[in-house]
Every structure is written in structure tokens, then in C-alpha cells.
Amino acid sequence: MASLFVSEQEKKEILSLYDEKLRELNIDYEYRSIATEYGNTNVIVCGNPAKPPIILVHGANGCAPIAIEAYIGLIDTFSIYAIDVLAQPNKSAETRISMKDDSYGIWMNKIIDSLKIENVIMAGFSFGGLVILKTLEFNESRIKEVYLSSPAYIVNGNPIKALFKVFIPMKRYMKTKNQKYIEKFLAEIFTERDKFAVKYLSKVFLYFKMDFSSVPIIEKEKAKGIKTPITLFAAKKDILFPGNKMIRRALKIFPSLKNYKLLENSKHVQNRVQNRMIEHYITKK
Image 1 (cartoon, rainbow, N blue to C red):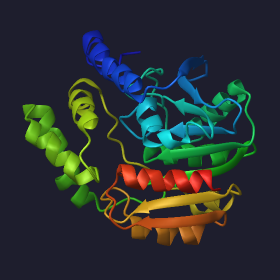
Image 2: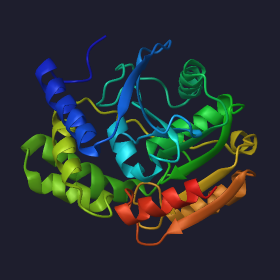
Image 3: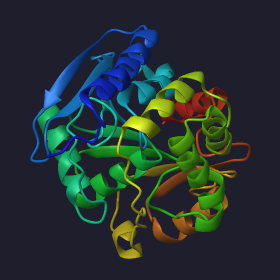
């Protein structure tokens, strides 16, 4: 199988940033490698092992240390399992699996099996939301509750807006390597500028073969079959998955929607203050 990284050298450069972010967190952790039918999955285990388990799932073109940083306030109150999603610029296998079938649900349930954890809380951002919903569709028996932030798989935004404001700046950066285009991209996606995101995505966009296929939408019948309590954080200024549209559809299709909040001043990626608020919801469950 051909690598998703342009070369081994570029892979090392991206993973060195992964390691840099993990060091910056200044936490005790261990790696676990879990074998699945789709390849090995890297998991960062941290937090308090005496506390309830929570699985964190990062978004597209991301990695587990970013997910831990977003919800670092959970470190004392949960036993944390941060997953490196397959086929992303991280330390898991580069196997690209389908968003349209049960693959992500099968994969995540295998991880939960291998970790030997029950009554699991899951929290995911963006593409991580799709992974979590696919997990619930396939087998939700060991999931206690989920928290979804700007999740994929419920609604999509206006494709013309996304093309001009997000994908064209990305493509222009990939062609020219001009930093102004990466800054333009980030300004549309991030609520506040993130220095690490600038460094990390500057390399990912150039040296990693990203998946540009369209994100599917969950079918109403499948959504109605989910029994696990869902808390949804939707971002009003999210160009990819608009918050108002998301809440309207979620109220119609998810009978297990326990709580929802529209983040008035949030773009797709929440800022630190908004992430602290999300942590509060999770810890006060």
C-alpha cells in the first residue's frame, strides 16, 4: 500500500510536530498499539486510571495530542484514551476506510474491545463526530454517553461558500507555499488563531495526501435507532457544518438528544474558552 505521506522524510517532520505537541502538554502518558482488521491503531492513554473512561476522537487532518489539548481539563477526572484516527497525519495505520459503511463503527468497537473498558463516554470534534456516530450505529452497548462538537455527518454547509472560503485558499497554499493562504484558511475555520495549527497544517497540506471525498449525512432511520444520550455543541459561524441547521436537524432525527448548545461566536474550531465550557458539560454530566 502506497504511503499517504509524500516521503519518509516529510512523515518524520509531521510526526516530530506530533511529538512536540505531546511534550507541550506536560502530562504522564503511555502509548498502546491495537491491532485491527484495518491496521494498527495508536492510542495515547493518560489521565487518572481510577476514574471513568473517556475516548477522545480528533478531527480530520489531526492527531490525538490535539484532542487531549482541547480537553486538557479532563485529565484529573477521567481515564483518557485519545485515538489516532486511521489514515490521518499521525501514528496509526494509513489505511483509508469508507465513511459510507460500518467500517468506522467496526474499527472503534474493536478498539473498545481491546482496551477492555465499559460504560465509555466519547467526545469528538468534527470528523471525530462522524466516527462516534458510526460507532453508535454499529454497536452502542458499551457507550454510556457522547459529546459531539461541530460534528460531521449531521449536516453539510453550502458547498460554494466552502469552495471559495476554505478549499481554494488551501489549494493555493499547496500550489504556491505562500503563508498568506494558510492564514486565510485558518481565519475561516478557527475561532482564534492557533500557532501550532499554522505549523502543523502548513506541513500536512503539502506533505500528506488528504481525503477530499464528500462527507455523508446520517440517515434518519439510523439516527432514530441510536439510544445513547447525545450532547451536541454546534457552532453558529461554522462554514462546514452550520450550527443552526445542525440543531434543527438533530432535534428532528435524534430521539436520544439529551442536550444541545449553539455556540454563538464559534467558527468550526472552538477556542479555549469554548473548550473549557464543553469540559464543564462533560464533567457535570
